[in-house]
Amino acid sequence: MNGLLYKDLLNLNPTMKYLAVMALIFCVVFIPMGNELPVYIILIMFGAMLPTTAISFDAAARWDKYAVSLPLTRREIVAERYLLMVGGICVAGIISLAIAIAMTVLMPGEGIFLPFIDPLTLMVMFVACGLFLGSIALPLTLKFGAEKMRYIIMVIALTPVVVMLGMTFLMDLSGTSLAAPVLMPVILGGMLVITAIVVFVSYRFSVGIYAKKEF
Amino acid sequence: MEYAIKVTDLCKVYPDFALDNVSFAVPKGCIMGFIGENGAGKSTTIKAMLNLIHRNSGTVEILGMDLDSHEKEIKERIGVVFDECCFHDNLTPADISKILGNIYQSWDGKLYQTYLARFGLGEKKKIKEFSRGMKMKLGIAAALAHKPDVLILDEATSGLDPIVREEILDIFLDFIQDEKHAILISSHITSDLDKIADYLTFIHHGKIVFSAGRDELMDSMGVVKCGAEDIAGIERDQIIRFRKNQFGCEVLVRDKRAVAALHPEMVIDPVTTESIMLFYSRGEEL
Image (tube, rainbow over the protein chains, first blue to last red):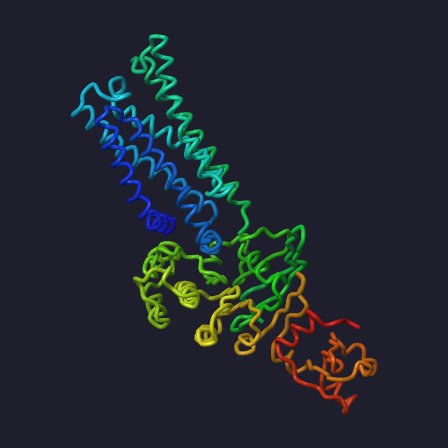
């Protein structure tokens, strides 16, 4: 599996550089405006899309046909995709956390979420959202191919943002704070449990889909 | 006889094509040429032998192990080359070594470098800068660098110029010097197989027509050149296929010596792999 991961990192290297530049532009544009949200979204989305990008590179090279002829089980090939997704999203989460901490220090009171939620909790929630999305996207990508999935993923990626903003709006209306000491652990715990279940179920689905694939 | 590959009653059904009880065996120390026209089922058979597609029925044994129960062990000990390069264009041969070195337990980086040097492939050159011939040589270097016992080659020499093909065939002949090794090579370039194959397996419309020693086939079969009216004079059980042309008829016969003994007046030419293939594919049965 290490070989597969190394292959994906080599292939994704130019893409990751490009994404880093994009993220930097987002930072320069949005953070001075006190709106850090697009930066988190773009970073987490990039992380969640890494396996899809890797799958599209593999499809172009017809790598899977070769990979299945190597001493690797199909389960290992799928597991590597999930490892890449989890790794990509966690790295995106760590970078987002660093940005959030820097904002709280340098621009206290600024930001969409930061005045209400501490940076670590916020990033755990974003990482959970990323894993949730990635777990929906990955089996679909394995089933239908990266090209068909690319645009659908972009749409899916906006879902958690809409959900989080909607949730904040509803809480504002009802007078409940997202950061309420009682509510926050429940939301966070619920998100983590749901995400863990979704990742597990998604992995099982992906293994099933890949096992049936013919090359 | 000890077999490196044994395929038994392999079936794979598609809506418009089927592999029908494909069976053959490749002895150790031998090269088997797997021949047939385009779409005959060569690649499908090889894919089924590697579990790239799912068989409907049949068994595959490689190096005495069942493919279904020992897939990983088998794949550790075989080298596979497809008709296309499956490596990403932006990688280099050095990258391939690092990738495959983390996949094959027995990967030998030095041996890989030796093959790269022998093939004149730069380690740091991007694969996208390679010609088709260079890509195929890279595939072969990658297939050999983990010291496999069996090579499975699907049209590995197609689209290459004669000089590169000759070079690659020499490598296969070197590989087979070890009597534990074996090669299954599918190709429709029959001249290549005439140079290296010990056995020939011919597949036609998803069915194995014959699987036999090449020398045995060349020694026994012959092509009788005669008029259309002379076919009736040849013993029916000797006629495999015949082809009519503007000058008369060509008949592929089972035992050229027996036919020559009975019909000394007839001209009997030796067969080639290509002529056998053409008779089976395009000839008529009596």
